[in-house]
Length: 326
Image (cartoon, helix red, strand yellow):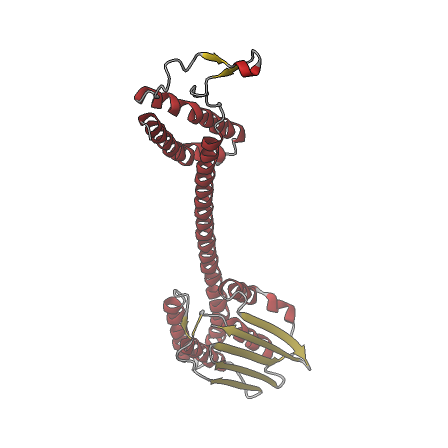
């Protein structure tokens, strides 16, 4: 390999490296990413033309090409061709402007660099989108929790107010129960997941608070089964359904019944609530209020594809069944 050939290879490789970084660091961010297609194509074509010519000129400056024959530029007549003239075979022909080999090499570097840069930008965009989406979900969940708490306290304080009006001796115990419930909400609901046993204790306290205003006309059953100590679940998912059971299933004039059950099978939690629909001015259409809508939205956000929620009305009984895969 001659010095000129070596110099040409070195110049070509240096130019290709420079073009790779020029393309990925300047041309793509400033033109391709901003959809300035015309300018981007113009600069790429200009770089190609420079690559096909400038490295050869620089290589010639560094190392002159070897001259095979001092007479290489003379024409040698050949009598066999009846006066026609051919070029001396020792004369190196001028390379065409569009060198096929270098053109393919340039396009290969261009394609690889562009693909890598585009893929990196796509991955970065996807990462940013996911972070934004997660932040949006966290913000929405926090907002939903802030809606659940006032809604719950509003109903509970109404019950305690009724006890205070009639000067019931159960007022003080009811306030203590409410204090325990508030403590749970302030400490546990800051977490995404809580032990299922904590949620069960919370519902127990809520039911005890509701019992203060119940009469002997109400039959109440609350049962749990399975392993409730190890499974984790989002807080305050069940309480809106329990609230509605007491809101629409309790009467001081007619017999009513409420059955609430929480059980586990493996990593699946089953919740069911069944209550008799008492005659009242309230209608079941109100079940789509703040509390129920919020818990539905939270289920969609926290357990997408991992929960089943059904509600039915049959023989004047309203039932809710919720299945969650933790």
